[in-house]
Amino acid sequence: MKEKPDLMDGILFYERMAQEKGYPNVIYDFPELSVELVKAFFDIWCLPEGAFPRKREVTKYINWCSQLEELNRLFSSDARMRLAMKRAFDNYLKMENKPIVFEPRNIKPIVINAIGELRREEKNKPKQVSQTMASPENIKKAVKDLKNIFHEDEE
Image (cartoon, rainbow, N blue to C red; front, side):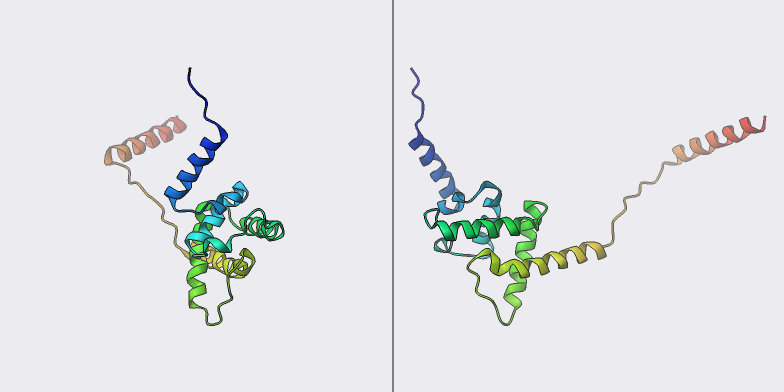
């Protein structure tokens, strides 16, 4: 008879997966829609594990969740979020009077500026139009078809 895994097996399994990816377990305590954003905080902004509130720190945890939700609304996808977060961090490094980053609210204005920069760059970037040339045989066939259409109209 095959034995079913218990809850502890599942917990240990996901703990191992989190450690292999290099993310602390506290990151996975946040709502699923915010996990990628929290990972970006960890990866890009290099916040230490202790900066992230635990669920037992109820007030701070709920505050972080609402701030993360607010930040998440700025992005259309995880890829764009990562790009904007990276740009925001680069801009942060160039700032003279850097604000202390200890929660999502601290970077919101910097991220909004980074999103604006990225949008302006996309808007000013010339669009590449792919053009394929017709083969000489296809051009001759099209001209012949047009001649036949005009000759039929004359009759």
